[in-house]
Image (tube, rainbow, N blue to C red; front, top):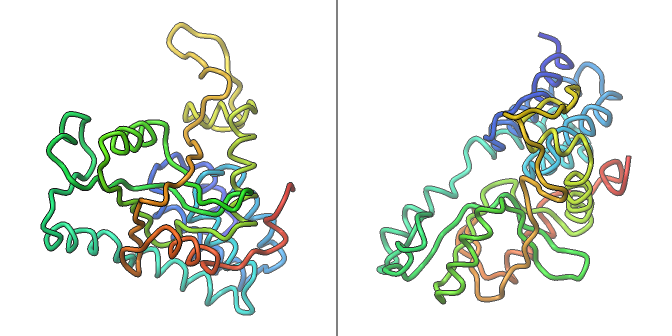
Length: 254
């Protein structure tokens, strides 16, 4: 199948596995780069328009568009996503830390825990210079419950989950805009962007401003677990600033 056709399928995908989506995109963008490099920018933008909150996809696109050899870069980025060791590191930490670590679960389960670990969709530096987290509304509530109980929080951010400040600002702006647009409301319902929303007793539109994602400030007391191990927030933000290039094609509006 031609790379453009595969990219169209990925753009329409409703799979919640953002790592698989981004890894497959890296491989297909590498193939496209070898046959039609001028198509890379519109292809990346189209993917991101349809998956605005997929942080690993932003990471892959930024690397491919900035590389001297986009073919090799796309394949390398995909390999890093497929081979991400973050959750293996988490398993090792849970076994060796000596404290009771809660990996998800209910509010009542937090009462017997000392550490709360949660997967986040992405981490970056906001316009104020402070760290921000992209996550679902449900995950934000869980995170706030853990903070209220004074648990140590581990933010699990695997390969491709950290972005430098200007790229993060571009993503954050589009996520916020996506909440209010008709296309964004369609995505939040899992409906393709070329389907018109209609009133129905069995299909209700989300409330204005609702979204699959929310932005939450990072607390300095948290720890971030990534492919290189457990880090302080300061170390994680420094890592984020060097996580990938910031191509002009992905900054601002398009």
